[in-house]
Image (tube, rainbow, N blue to C red; front, side, top):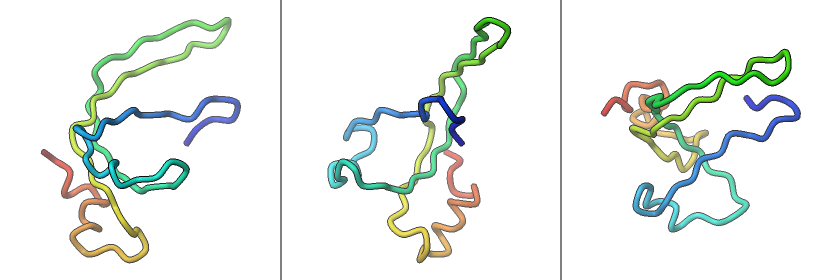
Amino acid sequence: MPVENEYPPTIHLTDKQVPEIKDWSVGKSYQMIVEVKQTSMSENKDGKEVRVDASFEITAYKVFDDLENMSDEDLEYLQGKGLAS
């Protein structure tokens, strides 16, 4: 969950990486679950505070059209059983 006074985490995707985005609209919300692999981490001192930054590679993803009416198969994905690639 984003912390108050911080920018929310963002991702940048192309239609080659995630073809579903071709049919999406700016301003509309979409449900997606992603599996990530951490590729780097660094610690930065900001005065007294130590901040940790990390980069990730998306290794698998699943787009959900309707979380409230999802199928048993989609529920398995949401519970983590279907993402391992």
